[in-house]
Image (cartoon, rainbow, N blue to C red; front, side, top):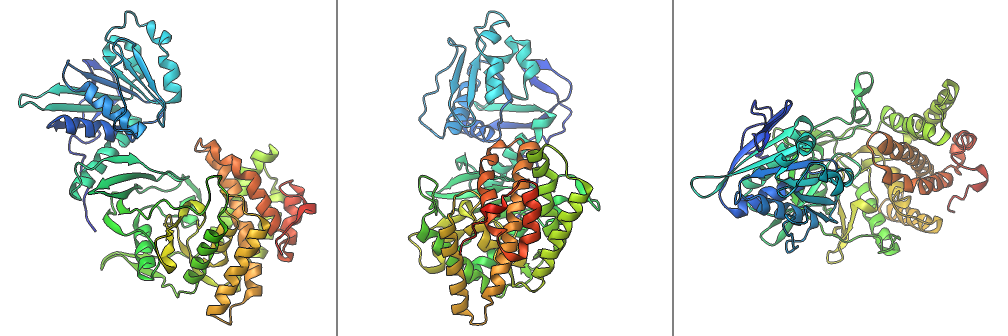
Length: 536
């Protein structure tokens, strides 16, 4: 794999001793992230667009430079990229002082050239704008409060040769983000895409970022996933990600993508990879969804997806997936330790949130004993490749393709070897979509039918038990994850899915193997024992 993008981002690396923050101002704790020569207006526009991709609410971008240095050019490109509209009119706010834009996130463009007094900042809504999104400020030296609030400073100066020279400085918190977007541009340049437009793409609940990149009329996807563990050590000196076998870099994604493609499944082709930097340029499988405009399941597309996973579970997957002669990814096993640390999220995060108290030592012991008994029942479960998040956001419907290729697979970097029933439960109890008991029953029946047609010895009775256990395990884990996303990561939007997850959990707990867990969850008020409506 390529080593592109491992160096500094075409300029001075973060940590430089230079500490300018714009227009002659100085402030302790600032670092220069990069210095670059910009050959023309197009290069200035690309820089503005690239910076827009890492901005977040609270950022104050101090944009400095003499008249004609390119401030307006950079600002216009930055705002248009956030708006995803290359023709958006972006007038100079010289006379209005501020111009807000309903982008994502919303941005406000300030020009303080004509400000009479720093007191006017309150009148024009500077503080309020920072609370909802980033703000871009030209002539920031006209107000000391802006310089104090600045997180990113961009200084532009005319070069003798007719181009521009830019110095980008940041507070420590923003340095990594700015350096990262510049490193991505270097990565693309090494791929022959130095001038390719970039746009924000979909996000997910993880720390990974995605962008689209236009390349010769084709849209590619850039995955930005720098190596990092998921949180601090929590047990035996290991972070949650290591215990639960979650990917901490992009190597597993590349390995699984190549293995899936080799087996005839529609996984993204890898156009370029820098494993050390955590950057991938991959195929865009399209935007076809298995849900409709009202976010309701499209039954025949869900059935196509369940047929795909049935075929996938019929493959004898190796435990070692080579990427190259020197890089081999070893698929982890979905062992008891991983399953237990996942379900523990329910008592660690969801229970305190729902009951406004911590679980007692006795409750934790009973919880542990219930799940250990269930994990013991899985000792003879069928083991296959488990993609782990096989649900509507990660299933691409491709109507123009045939057979297995109709279903595109993404977001499988956490794949492992475990009970195959897990992925069936991921789809048939889709965490983001209301799957009725009737559709769930149709999907599981179709799966069993497909597996028995391929293998008459398929154990459908054992599958029913495994499905109930893994569905309950997944639902318990997700309840904890959604609360953790709120309280640890500041992402409240996932709480709206909790009633659906509790409904799925109620269905699964109707299986006889889960009677002890059902009574425990009922005593906590997570489910009601009288509402056990498992699909028949």
